[in-house]
Length: 153
Image (cartoon, rainbow, N blue to C red; front, side, top):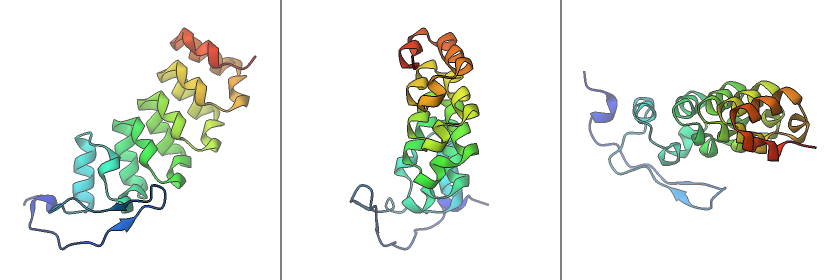
């Protein structure tokens, strides 16, 4: 049995309007926008940016993308940027993904610790309260001494 994304031609879909960017987003010609296709792309480290907007709101899809490329958190819907398992997967893979996390996640000690353990300079994106947290600052500086410039007094 062939995977669904290799079968036939998809009927045309109407464009969706991205309110954030102001652009209309169209599916790629002939591409089947189904879960099989989207997850196949995730396994091959393609960007979430190229995925139809409707899939960027799906937590299962976003999780698969961010665990392989934490930077994909930038392209997830705002609601998912505050989802702890998704953000943890992103910052564990790439500490800089903390930049795109919600403010609540930037103030979450476990999330920030995972981010600075992966890349100490991710301390730049932590909440001010956690920039004062001795354990987090020590973990960040241990990983990358340049992180000291982001610590609060």
